Image (cartoon, rainbow, N blue to C red; front, side, top):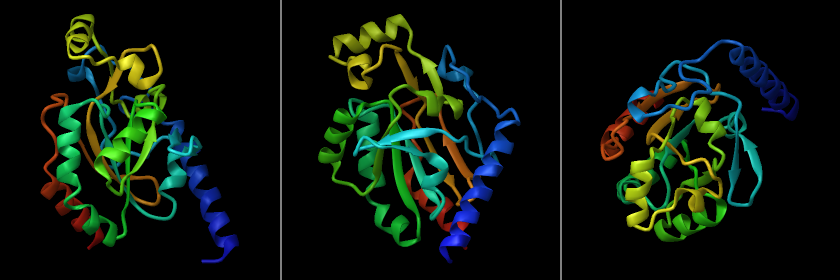
Length: 214
């Protein structure tokens, strides 16, 4: 593909995102009071044109990340979350297969950059880590809820401070989720569960990704 063709493709894709933004999406822009209230984006929806911050502290548009390769996007609560860390260990067993199949692997959380660096050092995996500390991007996916005071007190007993982790004083968390997004910005597979202890089995993710490449 020539540079002119690539530029045209990018312009066309961004035009589609602008058109899609005019159409109300399920859950777009909402902050929910409980995880069970959430209405997240699902298969067939177009991703919003939102910005994320990478480890180099650069802001990047999500549609730009999917422009060259389809992506597997993991949404997790933070490096402090033991269930997220356990899930990452399982996901690591299939990352080489996903990469070989042509997928780009990214993981998004409210953690600020310094916390992302700790997660990267801890797991040594091949996912690209991105921060959405303001929760503006994941809010557009319909995944964000406000943590209640009782839960905050319980977290405090375990030494977990959400505001310290994110660098923001909003007490917001995302529902853990997994998305497969094609190069046109269309969600081809979506999984989310209000019960943060229940995560997508890595074999099911691999099967979904494999089916999409056939």
